[in-house]
Image (cartoon, rainbow, N blue to C red):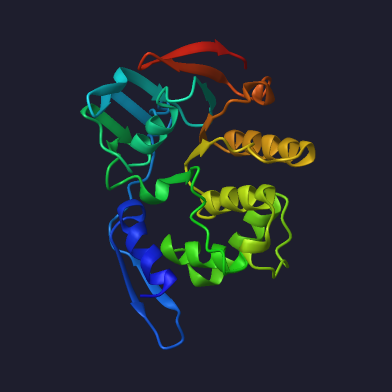
Length: 263
């Protein structure tokens, strides 16, 4: 089994039910076979929450990580989520991305259950980059375009736009294994954005970034929010989002509570 075949199998749980076939050239045909719901609202109607958590609890081995969480996250808002190590911040994002199931309660994305339907609506950046070390940046992004079912004619433009948004040169041909940690972090963010999702879930996006890159990513997140994207950022560097985030929220003792609205 090749590296690409192995990743594609691992990706099924997140990207939906995928069909792919190996070709002699080593390339893949990837098709999205699960319909993806679209967030929408009627003319003049208030925007429905992009994400809803209805009495959500998550228990690991008898330890309550999230306890009866009720929350709604609106389109066109940027939420900064803070909390101590092990508080449940990453678990919250995984539940919304459909990568984990709540022990109790319901998580909805675009009005549908998150598990199995979040797929193309959500861009998820976690501590694991999901990048192929032996590929270049553009090769990685082209592969993810295929996973998300993007039209072939638009893939090059989508890849170049995502690279520019995170401050990377689309002409880079070096293998990802040769990238610095900061470059890998930015490429991972480009991967999460490549399909222009309605929802961005970012787990510590500022890690390993220098001052210039941090400022660029902060501006990009504000642009995404202004374009109507729901942005959730888990961070230990909350100060970077002051004046940018619409709301700060804290996870402690299994509960999610608002701290302040800043816009």
